[in-house]
Structure formats: structure tokens, C-alpha cells
Image (cartoon, rainbow, N blue to C red):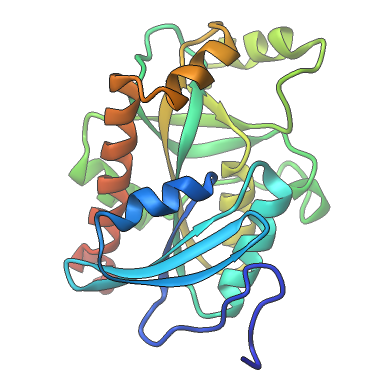
Length: 244
């Protein structure tokens, strides 16, 4: 494979220019259950991939691990193999008290509170999604909570609670570690991008409790994961995307 990318270990697939990225490699296996004609891609480090079809549309699914650096590698290498549209299906912690577990959060913009994207462009460069993908998300799932997210680099800093309280007071709806990288680097590389996140932790609730609930397949969270996957698949197979 002359064009095989060094980290994701993939080369261009015929007829595949749309992708879903997830953090957890196990979620790739989960998404495979919704697809037809699934083929294994590669599994190197945190990057596990498959190719399959949803309602006749060929798609690539790739895990990226945790955080901006590995997500950035995935985005850069996906662009190199002809991917033009990427939707992140991930999890988030709520930043507002009235957001329930399993609610879907969709980024209209992201506070770039990570370190990596500042190496690409100054932090006053906006991290915003594709208007077409955002429109399709609202069309297919109008009950989703849309707003500003915050992407960050860690949970265990001593001032974490104070920082979260500050951004909550500014109306930020949720936090993750990857959406800022996706929207920023995707825009720089001419890609259409969107981030759809399932809320797995209530605002100011114990992080470990929320993560353990995810592991234990607590019903609301698992329902949200299913809805986020189906929404991404529906958007990527929507005929309006071809016309955009």
C-alpha cells in the first residue's frame, strides 16, 4: 500500500469519502452492528477502523483515542486518503444543570481550551462546524441541545472545578476533549465536520460515577449513544449532503 498512512494504517477506499470518528475502539465494533457489508480496516494503537454501508452509503468508522493530539493525527490522515466529511460521535459532560443523561449535545462552536490547536492557528480562530451538517442534524434530531462546547486537555487539575464554573456561567453546554481539534483542523483542511455528543455526566456530578455508569450500560446513557450513532449515520446517508 503505497499511500498507507503511518498511524491509522489505511489507504484510500474506492467510493468512501465520509467518516465517523469515535474515541473508544469498542464503539467501532458497536457501530458495525448498524452497517451492511462490513470490512475490517486496521487496528494500530488507538486507531481501529472498519468500512461498511448504511442505506447504500459507504462509510469509514475510525477510533481516535482520547484527546486532541491523537484526534488531530486521525483527521490529518483521513484527509490524506480522500475523506471529505467527518462526524464525531462521542461523549460529553454537561456544563448546565438542566441537561439530562443521554441528551445529545451538538456543537455550534467550541471553546478551544486545548493546547494542540493553538499550534495550528491562534485561539481567536473559531472552531465551528459545517453549516450543512448542522442543518441536517437539526432536521433529523430537533430535540438535540445545540450550543457552544468546550474542549480541554484533562480532568484532574486543581482548578478544574473553578474553570468549569466559569465556562458554565458563559452558557457553555458541555465539555469534551476532541471536538475543538476536529472542527479547527477540519476547517483548515477543507473538510465538512460536525460533533455529536452523548451526555454521560451531569454538571458537577462525580466524574468516576458517570464513567462507571457508562461502563455498566446505564439505560439513559446507552440510549443516548444509540441515538447519536443513528443520527450520524442518517446525516451521512442523507441525499441533501450530496447536493451541498
